[in-house]
Image (cartoon, rainbow, N blue to C red):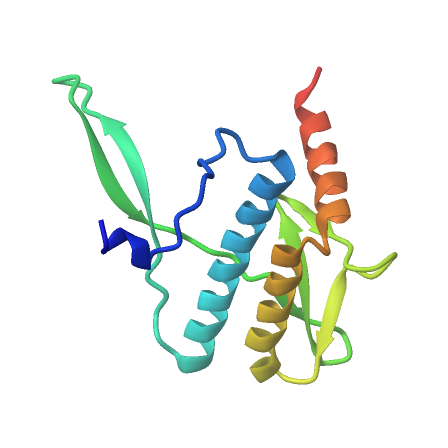
Length: 146
């Protein structure tokens, strides 16, 4: 029992359900991580090797198996008319406004892209974009209701 006394024991249990906003934050954080990986691969010139799992069913035998497929990640950044690089944050197919009427961040150079994406990721994890995420996810959900 003396070994366990060196640990900090607490009386908490794992929550059964996460709040919806926390799930949405995690989803956006994961997509930002993919964008950071894509930016790093483009800057260094190395290929991006992200995979996703897909379950397929064999039509003849009826057997199901899981296969790995290459995941295609589209960049969220683009070259603006004035020649600068701009990055927008997307939640699903919608662009999130980072400030009222301002959906993009202008960068001085492509080398600033990774640090900018990491700053945005920290803001999402801190809950600074919760209102914008709720607004965009509500618009996405309304498209599915009839």
